[in-house]
Image (tube, rainbow, N blue to C red):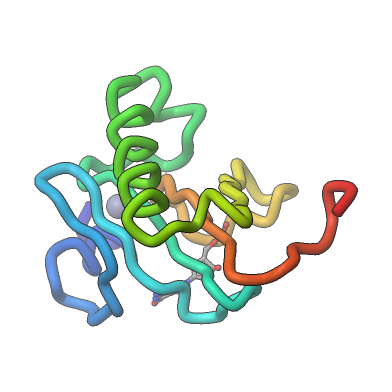
Length: 114
Ligand code: 5GP
Ligand code: ZN
């Protein structure tokens, strides 16, 4: 989508610190990190959130999670731990309406009983 921030990052029109890329998936550092490691994983096909993605391109969900898992394996994040979060809609705090998965790691994460 022409007016979408993350589509512009995919196209290289807006710079980002990329950490992972294949033909379907891109990952880069969040500009405002909430943990020592805070990455955003996105699919290259635009959708506004994972609820829409599950209808328009359900395969994309597993493609993104394959990318996340590959990155976690290669960088030894699964142990001691990693959190994957996706916000859907304004009440959840979604501010960028291109489906993205926050990957938080690198420290003891707060919340969710931790
Ligand atoms: P949301 O609040 O929609 O779940 O997450 C959007 C995330 O995108 C936020 O954590 C925010 O810091 C990040 N973000 C917003 N603009 C940019 C940008 O231009 N570059 C990067 N790398 N991250 C961004
Ligand atoms: Zn987009």
